[in-house]
Length: 168
Length: 168
DNA sequence: TTGCCCCTGTTATAACATAACGAAGCAGTG
DNA sequence: CACTGCTTCGTTATGTTATAACAGGGGCAA
Image 1 (cartoon, rainbow over the protein chains, first blue to last red):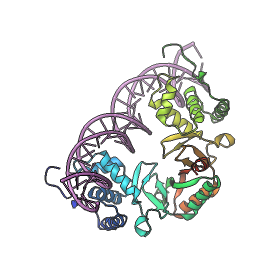
Image 2: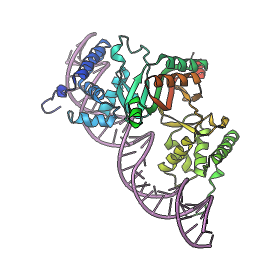
Image 3: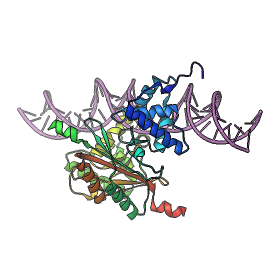
Image 4: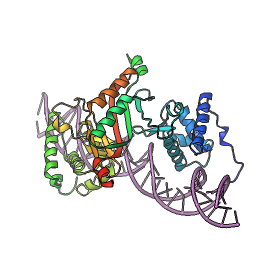
């Protein structure tokens, strides 16, 4: 690549995000994977966003520090982060959020972490729940019809507590 | 519109699909809505498909009987059918399945029907469950954090019983 | 040094979905 | 019937999300 190789890590995130990035970096290393610059940037941008953020919004942000970025750049990073459980895709929004579980968990990829997402249609904020009863119920229902569960997507749309207060 | 107005109902579906179409037609009439030719065709194609079917596949099928069909033609029909609870969108697949509940139910749109979908990643077939425990659990979990639930999406990816047998 | 694997760059295109506007059809009313 | 309002549909264009395919670079181990 021509030109002075800019250190992408010049992009700074808030302290708590930097902490999570460092933890993620160590987590990946333990898995034998590398949280490269691009992946780190994308994860940082997702963690810094108060709302789910789409691939093309990430691309725009990434471009200000990484001129060559193209859709595959972002999608490859997203695939990596998702495979490592560092982010989740919200299917109903085609957008991504940081996983609030991985960094509290010392298990590997197969720790069985499953989540439910509460999507507020007013403020757009997504809250991640980890409700075991829900997971158990759906797993039981599936097993009762002989279905082998590999991955479960649970997304709830509605109004969050904050927004409900403001309206009333 | 020029030319002889072709009766789109010339498209024939299997008997059981025709039955469901007739029921759907009556159901819509009770709601004060009309299951027009285009809507009927799209519903028929979805009901005839053993798997979820995407909007553009529907468009291709529709075109053989309806030359002018364009994406909005299909998406408008899909919106109508979805609003009336006659089909569901599988978010993970961006594809549509017929609802197996509506025709057994004599309530209106607000009957509170909620479903879980089991998606087999081998054969692609989707089975619809209606497990109350799962719905209760997720609703309870949401309410516990003050979230007002309006719509829940539950999609489970894995291996169906049939496919699990064949592999082993 | 060679070969391999992972990661990235690059171009192109596929796949999914909606905006906007006008006209045709259909139901109810006077 | 003519008028009106509403729903539905045709049409063109565009927006949004995601992937295919292939080439190059860089590290590491045999």
